[in-house]
Length: 302
Image (cartoon, rainbow, N blue to C red; front, top):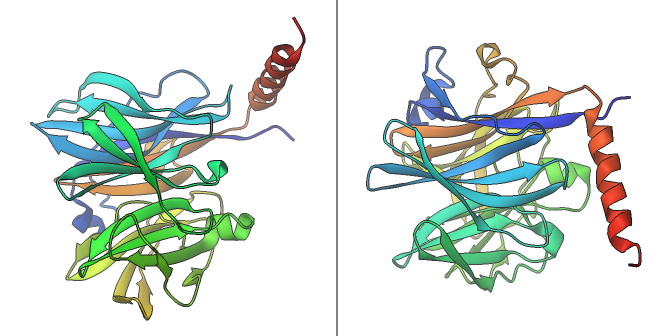
């Protein structure tokens, strides 16, 4: 069977995230799509930050040749034309899902890096390109797509676990703390949700009609197949009450990027998304073979 490669493309939806919470995906919504880039590479997991009429996108950049993700910053003007692009965080391990948030007058990034065995918080030293590791969060476990949220005077951290495929794609754990640095304690039950149709975090939480809302992936058909919004009627240290919203699916009008949708991030008047197409050509096998050959040559004595 040919090796399938998921390829993502970032879009800027010309509507606020509250529109999706109220109406789902509008049929006539305008979307500005970013360029695809080099074959068998992609940008995904967009988190945005407006500054001086410029939209700064922090994204995972992935190359199937190395099977390694890094974090890039893409600077767009008010018309969403690209002005600049730079690498901002690169580690020996894979990085993705660069969750951006502000706290105590500083801007922070919490990228997904579970293969490192740690969850490292980065502080912005000089916006938008200069970042430094600040601390590791003491969760006592590996966390996938960890998403911080300050609400009700406390910090909340939503994430999936790396135990197995079901938990990677369909578990939702929540921990809480007084400070972002911790210590962190789990909300019970743990996980609070185990459901492939809507559990793995898919973007920054937001308030809608006074309730916290968490975007999550619907992986019941395929990884990153669609989005659901989880509405929290209750979110406290003793437990949660969740009302899942309807599935938000990619539009057929996005072809060929109509086979998945796994990020929704509100950013002022726009909503950032990423949509998927699946390459079934079999070239993925060739890229894997090339990578293995390069590794073998690197290990060969001089």
